[in-house]
Image 1 (tube, rainbow, N blue to C red):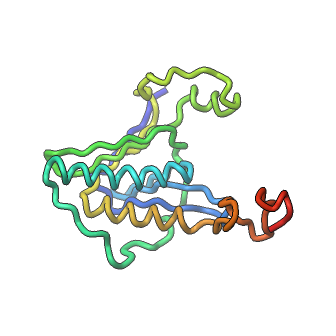
Image 2 (cartoon, rainbow, N blue to C red):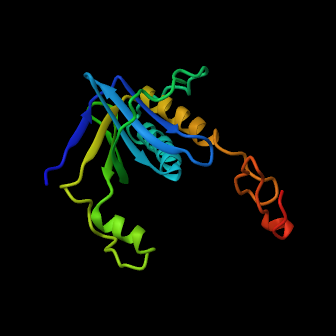
Length: 191
């Protein structure tokens, strides 16, 4: 089976977004450019970690290579919904980040979940997976190259998207559903 590399260097738009109501949201990375639109699904924690690690990468690029870092945008630059249709190309298993010193750009690579990862999820984590294996070259990928300014805008939007979910319970920190939840701090009584 052949793999596809969806490369956007640079994209017209690259954002994190969701589909669905809070508590049932599906998270996506979406890239648009050159008449193409690619959406890949991932977990909320992956979006959060991607924003965090991108921030660290920009800080390190500034420290080591003297790259000028733009200030976070004071006004929301892109608060539009995901472009439609939102057709999932693949589910992300691995995210990779790199900084290209020659072009002063950030490279983000989202790699599809492999068969081994899917088997582990289905088996409930009982199967052993070799942690040192590199992602297979025969998996689909989304590769995006961003300027530091575009990366900063992506970080801000990703943080807003992650924070826009259900509010946390003030006692236990678990998300509150509209109908409340069984709070462990109240011995299972509805909160």
